[in-house]
Length: 259
Image (cartoon, rainbow, N blue to C red):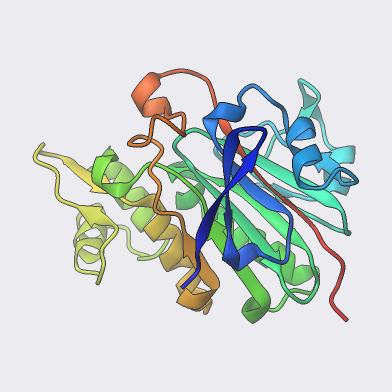
């Protein structure tokens, strides 16, 4: 089993996962707010160069080189995923209930950081990032994937339309009702009953795991944090709980290619 560890930096806690032990990485808590990725990279790996995005709930994945040549808004490129191109690149995403996904390749050392909310998940942002890693030489069996703290299925109420939209990413069908039904019939279904008509509860991290498994990635290559941002106010911001524009950062630093 993959284990999650609390690390301590000057009395503040952040999470790491054993599946990513080859890389400097961290899922930082709300206590680090308002420190920037620049500040947090100093905690992980001071020599690394730092990359972050203006997140827009899409499925665009960029490289540091593409950031350098893209149109910037507030000095940042608009996208929701980053993949490294060389060693010592720290890639960061911010989240408040959405899923932060960090990926490392044990062979090439390259990494990816992805912001996967329900919209990005419906647009298959994680498979998109993996496809890009593959164009840079990654093999699926060399990838290690950790999904950090996010809102848990049992407290994330959505409409049936949203459930169908996200479900279509794993069950290709154009009938909303059939998609929702098929999702409910899956073992360990990402949908949970909700007492309100027209609503269900949705486990976004489970949908991401199902997308990965449909690519042929094994469950052993995936680790999912048991923490829920909504239910753990002492550690994490939750947009749904507080309606405040605060975030926690998750980042990973690319390593050298293994010989």
